[in-house]
Image 1 (tube, rainbow, N blue to C red):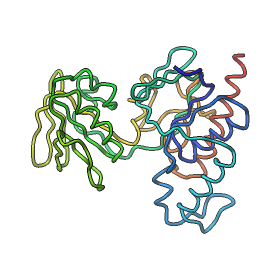
Image 2 (cartoon, rainbow, N blue to C red):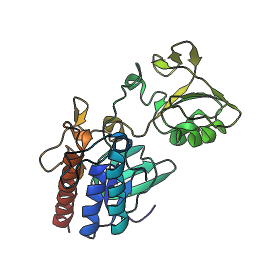
Image 3 (cartoon, rainbow, N blue to C red):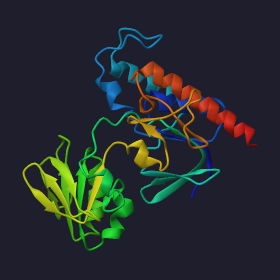
Length: 286
């Protein structure tokens, strides 16, 4: 366990980067979780004209400016995926695979997860459905498990899980070439529904069906309601006030995860507001 941080930030899009920059300026001990590619949505934008100070610029060019900014300020990105966050009263515990981090405050800037949950997914969370394969795999030692992978990064998790379970199915939902251990069975089919009464029993796909004891769903980010137990979510977005404060003390949210409009400038502004209010909250507790 490392020393407790002042602010933990989840997400490396405009909201998370803005929050980190402001935490850095105010000399707070912070950690920023995300990817050095920043945000896939930024890279895909063909043209940006509504970000103040930049016009007639592509998303990729804007992303380059973001990278230059954080590099010049010494803002580092921790490329680890946060699987769960637990409010412990006066601090938060962030679970990252086999490690845990502690922080006095939390800023969720994880963007908007547009893929809908599978049928049966939400009903069977904790009953065989999980979002951290490396965390939960030991519970299924000697059993059958399935990984539904939305990104290539899931392959390392699959290799680890395959060493513990008796049988592992891998369902890739990305286009890159799959490179996993030879004892993993790759299923190129589209998952439709997770079946089971008291626990996971099967995964129904478009053209086949798998009998399995567990289904691990690995995406870029975990949906907020699953990420932070007790977090208030309305219409798929985190409910936050003008200070970007959620219903959990010390927990703030910023960016697309708080609702429309899904705009870079709005996200960056909310990231700053969240960070400044988290800093004010920390200062009042000294």
